[in-house]
Structure formats: C-alpha cells, structure tokens
Picture (cartoon, helix red, strand yellow):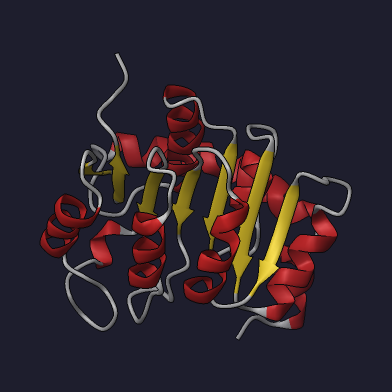
Length: 207
C-alpha cells in the first residue's frame, strides 16, 4: 500500500517533474544495454502514442488505467479530447485535481471492462485506445475492453495494449496467439503486431 508520503508526492506536480527528468536516464541505460526485451522504458511507450496518432490522424485518446496520471500528463497536449478510466478512487480524485483546468481531459471512475462499453457511444470518430488497466500480471479487464471495441460501429480505431509480456494465458490474460485469432475473426481488416512490450492492432499503414 502506498504510504501517505508517497501519495502526497504522487499527487503533486513534483512527481511528474521527477518522472520526466528520470525518463531519459532510464532510456539511455536501456539503449546502452542493447535495448533488452521484454520490458522497455516508459518513455518508449510515451512516444509511440503520439506517433500512432499522427500516422492515423487521430485526435481522441482513450486510456484505461489512469494510475498516477503520468501518461495523461505526457499526452495532454497531443489530443483534442482525452478520456481516462481508473478503478481506484484516490487515483481518480488525484487525476481530476491535476487536470481540473484542462476541460478536454475527462477522468472516469470504475472498472474499465464495464465503463469503456458505456463510454464508446460518445466516441464519434476514430480514436487511439491505450489499454493499460491491468493489475500487473494478476488480472486484466482487457478481454471485455477488446470485445466492446470490436463491436463498435467505428472500425478505424488504433488499439495499443500495454504489457504484452503478461499475455500468456494465465488468469484473465489471453495468449498472443488467441488475440491474433480473435482479431482475424472479430476485427477483420486489421493487423496485430507486437513490439516493445506493446500489442498494436490497427488497419494496415496508410500510404
């Protein structure tokens, strides 16, 4: 359990300053070691999100798993609308405080496997989905999240799923092979790639 001091630190702007300052060092050490897999620095994932938004001309980000809101902090200037879903009440309130002056950022509380399907009718254009609502390697709502997305009338979303290393069939996690089969069956016209600990599901790269 996070201590009161730890919570106060994560609830302050200093937390994001620290994360931004330490990220390049973590990335440099990782590159120096030869970019070992499967776990990669968070900075790599931070860069992939706006990269895919540019490639596919996406202006809306939907995140599951707000956690301490650092991904929100990093991405806040890259999208016109951002939705983030978090189960933990304290983390929800912390994120709402941090972004109270940012009307384009919406932090929703609840199990993302239940909240995301209710949010989807409000999504009226292709969006980028960053699915990171996992409880480490213990459990994940990702099956429900993906089922809802595959049924959504808009079929031009880009889906980025974090922590590919955990998708081995244990607990609530499908295997990567099961995910490939589901994409082929339920999301035709899309491809699935796995790189840098991220599962990437999208239509073939635009010319």
